[in-house]
Length: 67
Image (cartoon, rainbow, N blue to C red; front, side):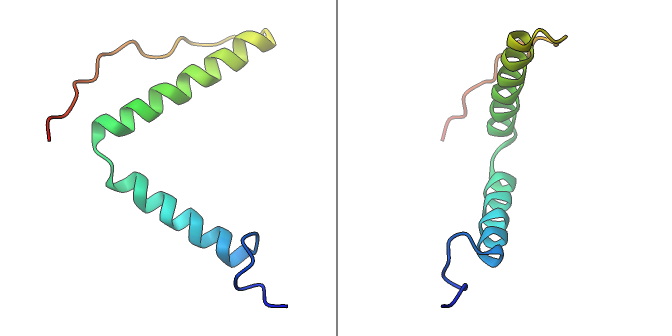
């Protein structure tokens, strides 16, 4: 059985990781900031629920791009 086409093979996982990195690198700064703020909100929620110290996520307005 070939592992080349196996979606869980190491080669396939590295390929998907590379595609994801390229996709993220191509995003605008505004899109990257939105992702960062969402991640901050998630970690804040998890830390709060676990009773750990946390910092609030950034409260900034990100202007919408006009295409």
